[in-house]
Every structure is written in C-alpha cells, then in structure tokens.
Image (cartoon, rainbow, N blue to C red; front, top):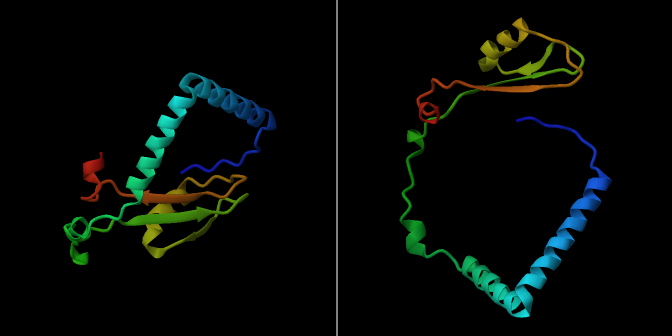
Length: 128
C-alpha cells in the first residue's frame, strides 16, 4: 500500500464537473425520451432483482470448512518513526523483518509501516 497526501485541485474539479454535465447532456440527447424510459426500466428491474433474497437452499449448499483446516499466513510487521532511523514498534515474531530494516536504516521525514509475507508459505505458492 502506498498512501499519498495531496490537495484537491479546484480547477480539475470544475473541469471534471463540466465534462460530466456535458457527457450526461449528450447521452440524454442521444437516447431521447423513449431511450431514457427504457434505460430507467432496465435499472428498476435490475434493482428489484438485486433486492430479492437469496434462496435458503443456495445458502445452505455452501459447505462450511472446519476452522482447523484454515492455513494462516504469517505476516511480519514493523513501523518506523518520522525523522528517525529507529523502529517505533514490532512484534517478537517480526524480529527478522526488524533486523533487516535496522541493517539498512535511513532517516526519512515520514513514518513508514512494513508488512512482510513469505512467498514460500504453501498458501502463497499458487499466487506466484
């Protein structure tokens, strides 16, 4: 994950709003009143179908696995402190990750959070 802090552009917001109004007006013109009514009917039917409850037999047919069969993926986590090359926190199970980060410590003006997942875990092999 990458989090970026930014400031919205009022110029871009105005441009996007203007373009969207133009796009909607062009679509209204292209479809006409009959086309709009037809599209409204399609949307209403889709909403009604979406609101129908799932049949009990469908829900009951989904097998529930035993919790003991779930293969958990270990995640190592560590966080840094802004304007420091020190680590703020990490769990004892994350010692290998913490040692790796300490070996290559760099002072940055922002705090970072690291999560490490081993791709050698049997569950992760299928995603390579």
